[in-house]
Image (cartoon, rainbow, N blue to C red; front, side, top):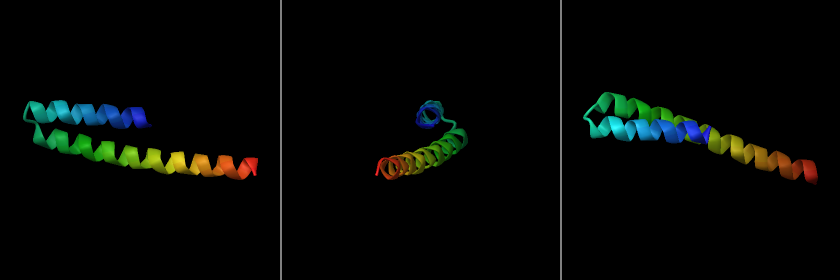
Length: 54
């Protein structure tokens, strides 16, 4: 999941470099969503791991 967020961020940077503002904004939006989903799943996984061991 984090990999895809980084990929969309790189796509946004390249699109912004070549002047495609709409594509860059869309890619940044997707990257943000994927990053926050990754964070939520990572925290949930950590908490479930702690509960399972305890």
